[in-house]
Length: 470
Image (cartoon, rainbow, N blue to C red; front, side):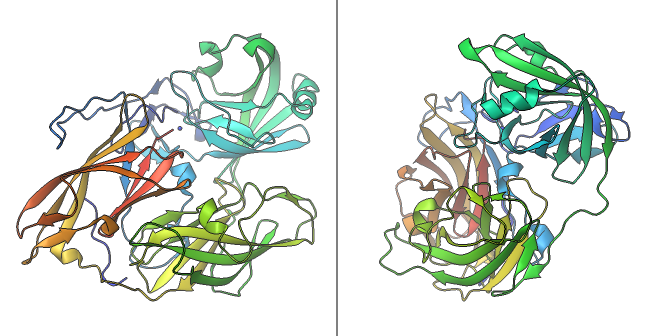
């Protein structure tokens, strides 16, 4: 699994696993669109191999690794929400394959809830923190869409007022609307397999009651409605406002934070200062906003709350943004000092999984040693967690294809996530590594497991996205 060279100069069952493992559902088509019938075939490949440390691979969980290739040009449609990539579900009819579009909105009667994807492991999952006003979708459930809502008074009233035949709708990131009719409400025990079964097209909404008993609302599939025109936004420049749904987004500046910023050697903080205005007629939740930074080599970086606090305005705080109100915020990213230019792309989504987005191009002059991809290549062969899940093992190899010795130091390797920079516990062999011309060095890195579902590994400018950590 080798990575494409960088440009010069410049959960489903997420805890169970494979290196770039993907879920496969073999199902026939229903109604000419994305609801499909048949049993789910979830294929998990466990790659077992020896460790450079001399021990055998001993882990209950592997992680998914995706090479992030550089892009040939800067275009808005080449940027996709990273959080949804961890929930990617591939459906096959036996002839053709397609990737299922994830749900982003659940409507019940006159109420609407944003949808957040969550991973499921052995029939269990955790509702995302601070998302009481949302519905949690179990990744990979695309025949029977299974969602959980918190047992709040509002949700109890919303579901309790339903009568048989009342409409319920799931809106996908593609804009497609799946139409359902409420059928029944019942109680079920925790982990009831019939609630999660994927043999019948429907919508199942679960709320955990007292004693862990599930309150289950079931709706039958009726039809689907395709969008007239998917919402797409254009590539913008600094100081150029872009409308995304009911938000007007304006980037005022992109800059490197002061050099005294406390980050690991070889890293720096890149800051994007921006403002958003609610130009709609209804309040908008700001705690669903998602952003990402991409450099000129195609490497993508997740926002760091700690780094954002160093900006002019600080991180975007949660809560509702009333119509006509403007709020300013800073988005900080921990990036290599040798951040590839000559331009960066900053992407803004109004909520996770939205197909609407603002893409802003920010000029950036590359500093430090230029990348020379013709002199080496990097490949990741396996990624897995230890049995306790607190140590992430990364195995790979570096090949020197040049004519001079290649030295790799600590500043050339980073692992970042939404939780910030991860601590390197062990490198084997010990750093720095010197790879002679024509030779291949087998390597292993051990990090403290990030408190996030995904992380970005960068080695000598090559980037790999690691999914399924939570």
